[in-house]
Image 1 (tube, rainbow, N blue to C red):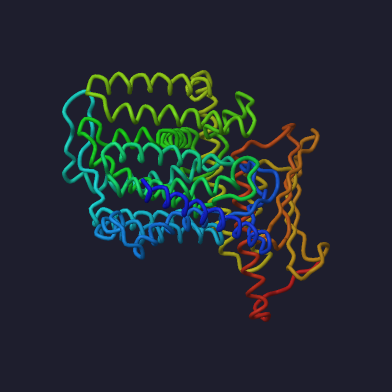
Image 2: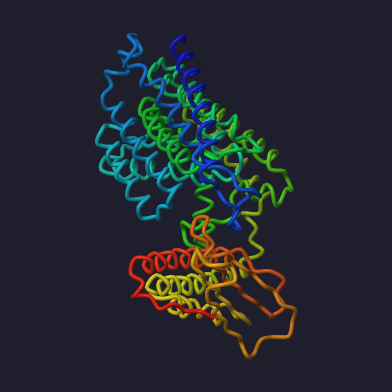
Length: 495
């Protein structure tokens, strides 16, 4: 127990110091999460990369075991596959998150790296080989062990990433999962898993000092994906050492909230015709705030309570027989159904509206794909404008305007492109303006005007326009850089 306490204290202190230092550096260097999207909840720029504190806090006591002569340290050092899996896999996932926080990583890159790491874990012996069946005999997976293990690792990594939407939420959810695995490992006498969990618990708490509402720093993808990776890897070890009647059900229940939220997001986006990996404001925490009118902090505390329920259920499953497990799972199912109904996920009265939304979103996605593809292929500011112009007809605009400028030019300089629809309605105008920004450099603005009587644009249109504005900013930045390198290849446009 002394080793556990020391490991917890070291990870806590390292996470505290690292998170504080990263916050100060992020403020100085402008590494901030800007309020530039309709899906953001915070109202001011907040430093990101706080996940560095979690990563450093977790690895610090584990690295110290290589230098200190102790019984626990000897056991840890002897577990080569465990060390390689956690250190190498964790470093790769943390590096991917760090790159995404700074530069932005596309879905293809993220999933490629995550699947590669998951395959590496499988090769090192992190395998799900049995599925629990509380209503009968357990199922041996055989050849299905590989795909299920890989999907589990990738799924948990992204589940923690998806639920990172409120101050202190992802860290708190992960802490409850850590607590569940620690108690299970402690009851089994698994010293190494206990050590890993106390190290991660200390790192999470050290970070939450700065992240609980109101947060002064976010963990970013560096932290959320790393937490998901460690919990996914540890949960495989937990399931492999559990009784066969509950194998895998215990870690699934321990991570019940992020798994449930992820499954709901997949179903919701599929029904509404939204891209599977798009962002929205329909997650469980968003609905608690909008439908039950809860404050930011109260919402997080309610979800902590739900995590506590899942934690107790997971611990109960570890002691229950088949019949008791079935009854416990049925009870949890009832709680989930009541919650989903309360939050409007099971409301079937608007299926016609859902179908119409799906059709409109499919058309919107097709429009955005064609516009962004044309923007990326643009060779000049004029080409960028020509690529954007189909938005006017596709979104039934009465006016569309694109202002573009070079970073060194005055805000009133540059070039202005504009189109007017001759059959615009006579209703009051709704105007939406999106800045065209590359990091902190303002490169222009996209202005859209409707006169069809609408009071606001819906969330899907807002997110689609943000995607277009981001791609325009990316391409204009590339054109500006090309002009600086080869000015003879660019024709300057002035008004």
